[in-house]
Image 1: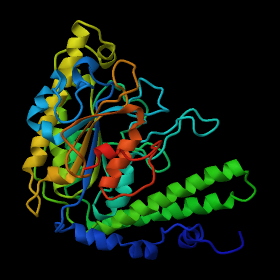
Image 2: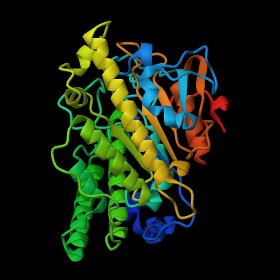
Image 3: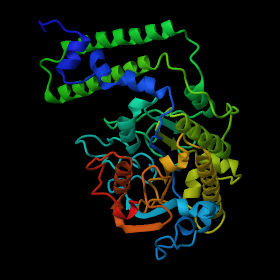
Image 4: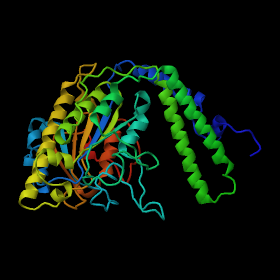
Length: 430
């Protein structure tokens, strides 16, 4: 190339708003300063929680003949009885492209076709939590926070580093230790401000070098190689965006922790309980507005003294395996009931509760055993203005992404589609 090249010229030339003046015009500093104070109007938030291999279909799902509010809670949901008017069970949904019964979390929030790219046997698209992060993440220290259960077993979750997938369909890494989550949310950085600024500057210098090297080889490449290189450039633009946001929050103190630091080494049921408390704390302090939690399965079963691993329990039949599966379901419902209690007890600046302004979804991409239809889906919270308190049975094989699109619309994100969606679920809209 004969013309001078630098990072800002390149980014403007490719149409990306990554140069510092452009970032400032987008309002990163303005939102960072605003986020240091409590918003006068409570923001909308969303949390998605997945349990992996699925549920006990015989005792978790309400009778499909009992639609609406007047339905009998099955034993698997019995601990949620005090909140029956505050959650809706959605039945009949599936992800049409998912064919992996051991990968219940991989496409749960994306609805993507893993074979969408010719020649590749694994591709994905953006998860619904990351769509929410794109729209609301500019106002918070962390655009999103993916959490991951500390579990030696995959538990039927499948490929991925968390429940979250970015706009390029790449896995987003999650945090798995409650102690690490606590410190990420609330602990001050011990490194002096000047050193943190220097570290960001060093990272930018590295980006400048790799961009120059990449541009030198761009000419003469095939279309396929140029497509790969463009994906590489987009990754660098994303890093630029994150560096700029980190810079904008350098001198903004973290929120004071509304919970105590967790004890180290928590596993299974104890881990899930403290993670729920940390989720509430993160939302309460407006540290983020989009969260996911890929929950532990094997350690939960161990903490319940079932003596079985997740895969064995997933292939249950009458007897000890089914007993273990039902015991797991009951534990999840008890924990979820406690989570809802916390959301309701946490007050907002306008007198409403955190529950009133948060949408929480509990479910997964596997129904039971190896079945991939009628996915377990429980929605609670008032953050999307949904019609709660019902057993909603949709037509068989309704895209689960229709539910995600309905949630997005309820949060004010008016997209035409998400994943394989075909429209919103009108029966779910409040």
